[in-house]
Length: 135
Image (cartoon, rainbow, N blue to C red):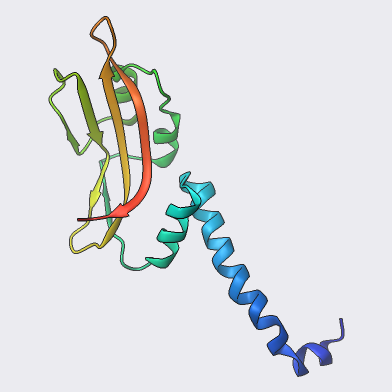
């Protein structure tokens, strides 16, 4: 393309930029955090109003290593201490590795749901990774 054409008709490219940049941001949240498209769009609209506190030593890479069916000890050895958790003796336990920061409207939730199997061993039932209101 001729640079004179671009300089003279730059406004033709504005709609493309308005659509491409948000699409790239949504793609980033979807790929990096594993969010659904709706969570990614929500995260894009709330950039700047989020604050997330993470447990000490937490990393997305380690969190993604946790798979359904892993026992609680393997989860602990992989990610270490959650910020909050139910009583380990409960049939279902939620280990929260993130909490909303002070004054945050939204945060990045990271939770592991453990349920006891027939032998009484806590196993990963679900790995929750989503963008949500701080409530």
